[in-house]
Length: 133
Ligand code: ZN
Image 1 (cartoon, helix red, strand yellow):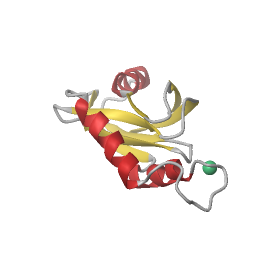
Image 2 (cartoon, rainbow, N blue to C red):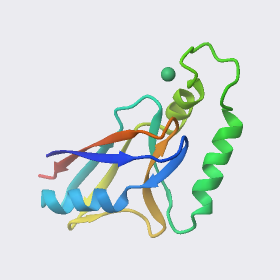
Image 3 (tube, protein in one colour):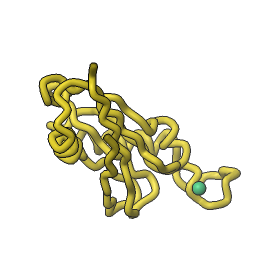
């Protein structure tokens, strides 16, 4: 089963919680046990799992990535968004999450975040649900 999630970013750099969208897709798939593979088909965005309880965690992550890979330095890539490409590679563009008894097996404080590094844009996340057995 293959689905596409649409994500709309509103800032250049932003972490957007897409957990509820992923849960909705799993419910729709009716798969009780299996694997959820999330894939971002973009070169200046990423996807990660981290704390969704305290919003300052995602602010800290964005701030630190900005310091590690500053915007507008002397990069070779002429499009002007080299920092976003590098952040995409650092964060990664795909994730697996287990599905058990119809439930996404995230830890208590975990959420799934789409990471925008060159927004605002309309983005997509590909979701493949693999059924066990
Ligand atoms: Zn580029």
